[in-house]
Image 1 (cartoon, one colour):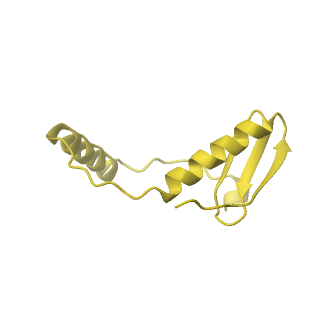
Image 2 (image 1 turned 60 degrees about the horizontal axis):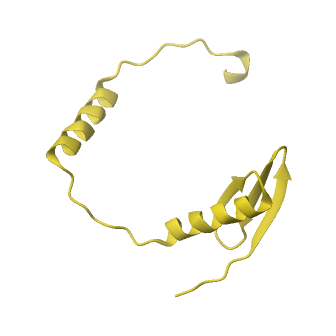
Length: 85
């Protein structure tokens, strides 16, 4: 099924920004055409149905290792600036 969306494009510095007006998705590119093409790709990915897949044992162990590292990571002390008080 094909869908039609409206986009707005503007320039910010050396980059062009393309934003879909119907869906909160935006992209950028060095040219207006590139920004619109990147927006099209982002919309395709947004509406692509999710695909379930089984992790390999190595991927599952790596995910577990990363989660444990984050969970047990000691808090970092930092000095607050005046604006953060």
